[in-house]
Image (cartoon, rainbow, N blue to C red; front, top):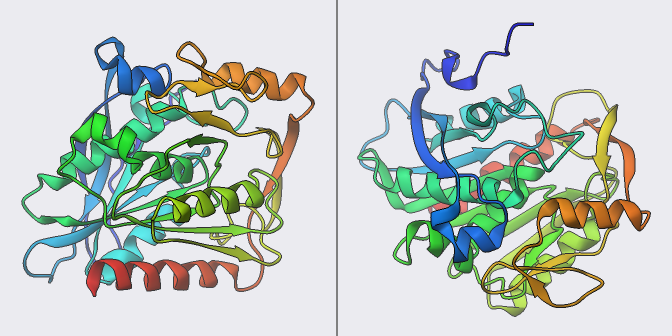
Length: 323
């Protein structure tokens, strides 16, 4: 069987003539959050990559949005979002967390690499783009979808990101689309980063209620954080694709939250104390044994939902990166 073509090896040219430039991002695949924060020398290193799209006519240093895909990897919708941003004179970087790790999808098994690794990719990308001569390091935005939504939320948590790229660097704004919020820091400080979450009330991959709780925790910590729950919307409702059932999807949206101590150690929901040895798989196995595991979930859109998402996206980044 022929291996699927990696994103880095594809030539991507938008309708406006903008061509993607492949950029490498030195990253890591930590076993868990504790290793990323408290024992970084033990992390296996990996170089992930993505494509940077720069508006042609824009002058000066540009704002940039990092688009982070979900469990199905990079889709046409992510590239369409990037093209829309470029048309707004915002640079876009589409991150590929999968290719360098030899993974094509995490839909049936989210533990092929850790959620900490996904967040590390995001924070490492911020560090690389902050040094790019065409980009404004003070106007970096993130947009993550599903697993990518979880990655951008963790990737701007100060306890995590400062372990990756230092204290001096911050992200201006984050749009988390239908994010999984099953791992949350007990101290969710995101500094001056503005956070916006958007999720459908019919989502059966993630918990809208868990996302509400996370946004409220951010507010109580002093962040500017808001959430929009879209009536009738399923998971991935930004895709211009008919609603479909993904039979192999393995999800547990109703499982209890795994909280994270300041040093990154996970807190098992039934134990209540942090354990540096706990991994994503440990909590996933617990969720299955406790009866929270579900096989099969739904993605897609109907009606004007993709247009609604684009309006939300363009309005948010126009206000936070261009005003």
